[in-house]
Length: 179
Image 1 (tube, rainbow, N blue to C red):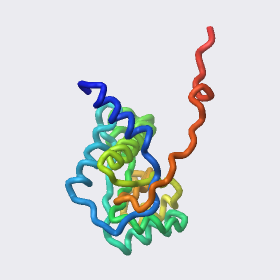
Image 2 (tube, helix red, strand yellow; image 1 turned 90 degrees about the horizontal axis):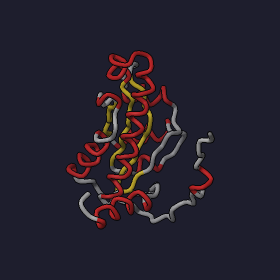
Image 3 (cartoon, helix red, strand yellow; image 1 turned 90 degrees about the vertical axis):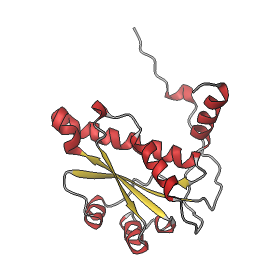
Image 4 (cartoon, rainbow, N blue to C red; image 1 turned 30 degrees about the vertical axis):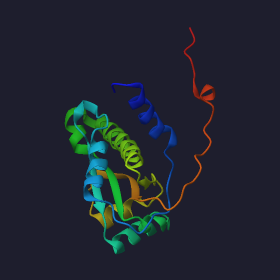
């Protein structure tokens, strides 16, 4: 970033992003979706192995099945696009062995955060959905056994403007090493 303005814009996206669960019935331009996914893949990655995959779902019936498998969170089916982010274990395990499973999950979750921020920066809304029946999502989307769905992200134009939720004061979360 080359200026205070650029820094402020970046921090504004981080501090003002909210979870959106109501979407307009309006398509997302393909170039926006690709930018969001590229941002996801720009996230940090152990050994730069990028042990994450993105499944794009636009089919309405499939989105409804995903929503049902996500504990009947039917707002998922209202989004024009649903992205399922998966950890790709072999991509990381070939270098890091068993510990590579953890790294693949970290790679995927770092990508999820970047997707949320990129969507927000583009004026889109989305939410990180982690409550779902993993086996059902894997079966429905034909996810290979070597990969694990980590999150469902419905993405669309917001049809709501929720207030940002309260955060713990940072002082409660900081723990300093004692000598």
